Length: 126
Image (cartoon, rainbow, N blue to C red; front, side):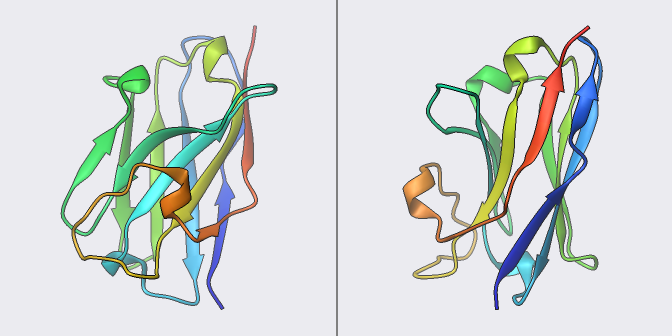
């Protein structure tokens, strides 16, 4: 069955960097879109970064600091985060859409994704 597992979260000082991984199983990731979302305590889930078979995009709030990449051979997607600040503290999730997917298309809303990982905590604090 489709599974996504995030890893790489942790505690980092302001200005630091982290790389989150999203390992996929049960499907071939390179055909489908992957979204990275985050949720801070008391806040709604927020889209961070999106990648399809041929395109990528990031949210305005993280532009210039976060990028996303994929390793098709490893069936994984990565979120590269730099210049982290305390406002980036959240649980980070990766998600994929397998139903009604159109190759190459990016999906920006959480409701458009049908499988989610369990999340990984990122805490930015001195």
